[in-house]
Length: 557
Ligand SMILES: Nc1ncnc2c1ncn2[C@@H]1O[C@H](COP(=O)(O)OP(=O)(O)OP(=O)(O)O)[C@@H](O)[C@H]1O
Image (cartoon, rainbow, N blue to C red):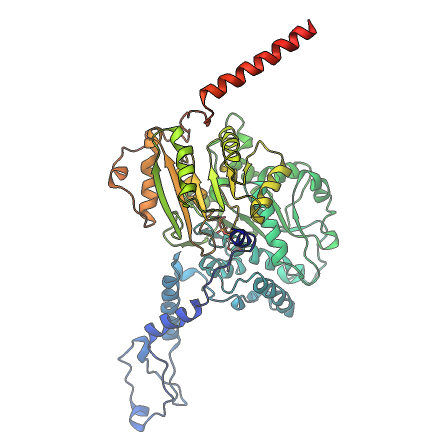
């Protein structure tokens, strides 16, 4: 058991060391074996024959008589190689002719043309060292395509499965672009503006996610020449950020924040007019206007609108999500300019490394029984994340499992910030085997070695389902997701079953034939309370409470 939890505390790794080899093989398939050293004969010298134009038999020659390829052919071969490489990595790029080539290794990250400077060499050396120390051997597909796009300062719409390394795909370019000295970045000789400036801005929908991104920024930027200045914006440091005290004379390389914190800071005078790159992580959530309630200014979408209006038009903008919904796509048209449009894998579907199962449990009481049976049969793989539809239910399930001898903890918005941080830290260390939570931890949170995600309550949308189960099967690891359902869940079941089918999991045909959901609102069904206390015990404790109350009243009277 201890071994399992040691894995939990180690960082995730993607073992893709064969990727380079695969690339070479793909290219070789396309272009054929490399030509042997060839001394042209007289006949050949005189021949003008260029009929055979397949990539592996191009015969144009230059004046020295050596094999050469015309510019157009070279471009054609190159485009075919790039297309084959993208196919092999499941990288899809819309309007690909206009998009930068993907990289296949971190060492291919180059200095942008407009910043031809030795400064970059020193910076990249440090960052490559940090990448290596994190045991990231090769870029993941989303990193392969996003890093060069952002380094060329192209706007970007990026969709890639959960756990596929999207954070690295925007943190690395954010770090690099923000570290380039002012005069090189803007190609000016004049005085440089630094104090108080914020050069990269990363926005995330929750504090948990923002602080996780901040940790990654600090790790990847460690030892940066001139020092790294990054900040996780919080109530406590907002005043310093506004007065330009953080970051000192060199300003801030990277600011990470939730939208609300930054809108507050803007109202207090925070300036975003030096931002070079702004990233919206979990873009579909950040562009969500659905949970507006009565106060429209409190929606993420309106906050994002405020923030973007403070950022210079020249800044690079990037949207990242595992679920690029049609709404995001539509909104992206008004946010991004001629973006590189990348998607990895099926796009919008669940991560294919997760083995997904549905389990009918009859009614609410059946859920606890199912958990206990899974534990007994050794099918409840630890460490596990269990999702409930509300804080109350998460808390009640926690109370139930606590007495089952399982090392369990609970996380939801009703707990204090430090209690939440503590719950995550203990889970990461392996002190807790099962973490029960709400959708607060459904998105983005990287608890790398989670083996099982159990949906105690069925999620109320396909998007939430994809994000919840995406807490397992991260960084190339295999994961398992079990979703419990009752009669009350049949309306929502079809959506989940469809997602499972699309990602290659087995589902029963009748589930796919269920009627479509009428009520598109994400309201969860009313459920019976989570409680297994026998009614005799309940009555006994009620009587006890009554007895204590009566005797207190007697004493006072
Ligand atoms: N190139 C890489 N090689 C190995 N591991 C990597 C690489 N890039 C990222 N990782 C690791 O993969 C894990 C998942 O990465 P990350 O959190 O960025 O995923 P994500 O795509 O943002 O997921 P989500 O959609 O759930 O937010 C992390 O533990 C990270 O350290």
